[in-house]
Image (cartoon, rainbow, N blue to C red; front, side, top):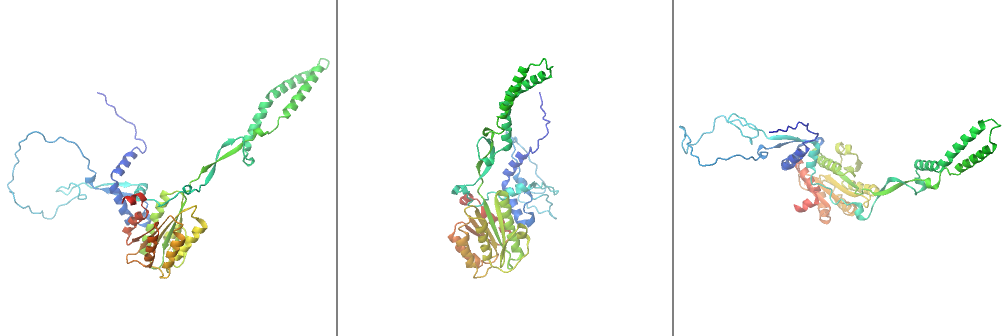
Length: 429
């Protein structure tokens, strides 16, 4: 019998397929662990990997074995201590159980732990943002507006004078002159060599007639060579540029966060968690998207990412200041016919009573007609404030406006998924 032993070294990433199969098989457990991790982690640690624990009973593999067959007669010995109907007392002191309780613990306290493995940062984010998307993202070319970019596509014989390729044109001119004057230059060298030989002879022996004929022929050949133009029209070469469709699904997300004094530190942390999730989701899934950060109390201002998430500025509450600033930025930098515009607003709902109707009017008249989707989250464990009641009228009038309430950190991820879940999945549920 022949035996074949494969001693080849394992290739790089050879187990990748097996790992992907494993992640697919235990997707439910991993998804549950990721959902729990989002609510427990700190703001600065949301995008790292995660340790996943799977109960041992869920990774047991089926196996085939031979059963007891045929007719068998057995005698089981009895015992001297117990008879049918006796009750067995619980052991004193309790028994030690090892592992997680799902393992096979013995009377000596031994058992088998659950299976634990580590998923990477990319795998964690894949599970975190699975089945999420920006609603109503429309490509501009579907609306009849297309943009193009010019790319180089070689060299052609005809074109615009401003696109002349000087190097290729001079190379072509040199090649043409060499080709057209090759025979003339060859004969010129032969005649010059013959004339030189005649002139080196003694004056008595020199052939004056032949010498004169050579001089005339040399002059004629030189004039012929000079008549060849240095650069001709047929030598010109032009750079060719072709138009290619340019990706036009440009999108911008406005993030509006209330940092007023009524927002305590716990509420601000929940708002930051929500916006960090949103920021990670946008940057991971969309290459061409811009994010505008706006903080507001009594006044609003546009800030960068660092100041948006970590600044400690506070004050009173006038929510309309943020909406007015958003409207100004949209008009100045993001026209609705060129950009897919999205808005996300987080607040505790506390606002001046006469300012909440202003917010409603700004949304209905100026902002919502220009945006693809607008979401509002109220971070408030208590009853709803005046701003929520005004926004309820907006939600009843507009389809692409959504609002949710967050009471504790455990609500953040479910609310986030509800706001940005893929449309077809919403219909199915």
